[in-house]
Every structure is written in structure tokens, then in C-alpha cells.
Length: 182
Length: 273
Image (cartoon, rainbow over all chains, first blue to last red; front, side):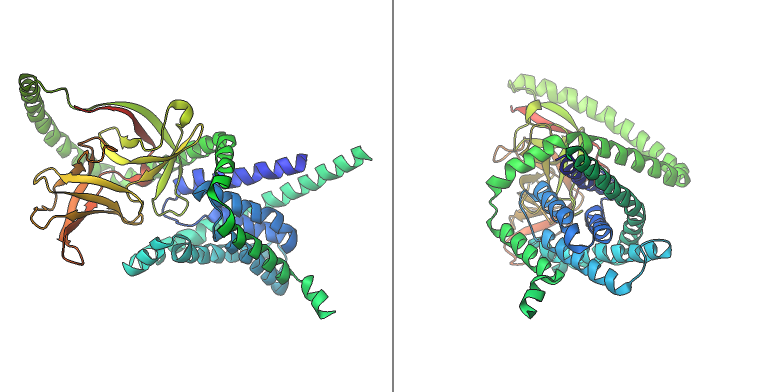
């Protein structure tokens, strides 16, 4: 129960870090970079099926907070988690040292794909409008791309060790609880 | 045997979870998710507040360092602007007095007096297309859905669309669902102001017989009763005919930078003349 509460609290922190920090600091990003990066990190730290226990509630809660209903972004996060797991198994690169930078690039790529996905599908009419009026290029090409790549890479490099420590902490608490019960 | 192996694959897990989520996309009704959302917003209010303050302070610091190089030019520009505004202010004070006298002679009530509630911005549109922002005033502070939101100089920002206990969501004018009745201050041409999917504002449905002048201001017309009359929406740019050529339309440039907005005011009560 304690671990569940701590995990829920972490989900809230991630969601509101996105909505009340990243979206205020970088209003033109048009992509929930924090959520995408956390999905990538959790998949790398925990492996695919276990990561879903965090990434699915994260994306579902995020969507409920943003729009009041579950949307297609949650499906995107599942596909993203599967894709990252698929890549990490095939790349066979250690998640430390220089390997971390490669995964940071993967996180940045995921954020870019998410941006296209959001503009094209999630926003419904907005996507059609943006494409029709030629606003797509202004939202996507040039500086916005660089901004997304840099911020999501930096975020990944910061978030990865933090999440690792968090998961270790959770394991320690679970073991303590188990031993107390015994 | 092959079937059993397939059921254990990650692909199958991803497929099943995706199907469940897609099903919830279509079948999870909003009345069911609304209480969840409101509870989350209530619990997470301290996080929202702390993160937004940190974000604004960080943004201000960055802006301070990046603006040092432009300070000289900016200072000169502001000095010119100050002189121009001083002259205009003197002229307007005179006109204001005259207006007061005429209104009292005609027995008119004072112009709109709003009861304002100050609010801090604590969240923003995650899609980044400028559709909404969150403020730190909610039902407990007397905020009700539909209340107009302005910045201090009487410039319209949007309206409250969703209220939880201690925070509210403001639908910005640039939201595609936002529609406001507006009129031009110079020629009094009237129409509706629509959001262009976070990319700007469109002054639409203006009759062909009306005149739209580039650079003129558009204010709320007060029709419909949602927004009080006279709140500034923006200035006209590129007047043109609509695609079907039945009406005129124009892009509007809002004087506020939504990205930098930190404090807003909610009009909680309007005493209309």
C-alpha cells in the first residue's frame, strides 16, 4: 500500500511537472516531453511488461487531467514503451556511460514522433487546420526541433538516474514490508 | 504450442493493453472521469503552485540575462513611448472629465465597474497550441464557469471553462471552441471573434456593408451577456472576404503575450450600465 501511494505521488509529480513547469517554461514545445521521457526511462529501467504498470496510469491520468477523458495519447505511450523495449533488446547497449547518450537520442526521437502524432491525430480539427494552413512547418521545422531534441535529451539524462534510484528505493521498502510481515 | 508462445510475447501484452485503452477511449464516459480529474487537481494543487512559481522565476532569470544586450535600445524606445503616452494621457484625462459631465447630464450610470479576483497562472496547455491555462482560484474562491478573464488593462484573455475546488481552467480566445461577439471601435462593424486552433484570432461574419480598417481595435460588443462590453480583444490585420465571399473577416493581433502571462483577473461580477 505504501509503495502504491509513493508511486501515485510520483505520477502526480511527473504530470504536474509537465503541466506547471515545462509547459510554462517552454510554451512552444507542443509536446508533453516529460511524459514521453518518463515512459522511455521506465521502460529501460523496468523492462517492457513491468513498465506498463507505471506508463499506462501515467498517460491515462495525464490525459484525464488535461482533457477530462482518456485519449489516443495513452495508446501512443504503450506503442512507445514497446518500441523502446524492442530497440533496447536489439541494440544491446548498456544503459550507462556513452550508452545513456544513445538512449537520450532515442528519447528525443520519441518526443519528435509524439509531436507529429499530437498535431496530426490528437488535436482533431486542429491537426487538419495546421496542415491546411501550412502552420505545420512553423510548428515543426527548425528551432522547434532543436528545442525538443535538446530539452528531451537533457531531461532524459537527469531523469534516468533519478528513476533508477526511485525504483531501488521502492524495492527496499517492499522488502522491509515483507520482512516485517514475516 | 505456437499459440501459447504467442500469448506470452511482449507484442501480445502490448496488443491487449492497447485494446483495453482504446476501449476506454470510446466507453469511459466523462461523468465518470470528471470526479477523478477534480480529485487529482485538488490533491496536486500544491505541486502545481510550486512548479509554476519555479517555472516563472526560471523564465524571468533567463529573460533577464538574454535582454541585457537590448537594454539600451529598449530604454530609448520606452522613453519615446513614455512621452507619447504622457501627452495622450493628458488628452484622455480631459476627455474623461468631459465624458463624466455628459454622462451625469444625461443621467447615465457609470461605465462598467467590475469586481475582480486576481489569480496566478499555474498551468498551461500541454499541447502547446495555446488553448487553455490553469489559474489558482477555484470554486472555494467563488469562481464559476463562464466568468470572463482579463489582464489588468481590460484586455480579454478568455473565460473560465472548468472549475475545481481550488483551481480553474481558462479557455483562451485562441481556443477553437471560443466564440466572442466583437465590434470594431472605429467603424462599429460587428462580428464574431473565433479562435484559430491556438494560432491566432479571427474576426469573422462581418457584413459586407461594414468597413474593416487595418490597425483598428476590436472590443467585446456585450451581446449575449457572457462578456461585458468594451473589453479589448485585439487589433485588425489583413481584412479580407471569407472563402464563400458572403462576409468579411480579418486576423486579429492580441496585445498580450499569452506565453508570458503570469497573473490574470477574473471578473466575478459585472455591473452593467
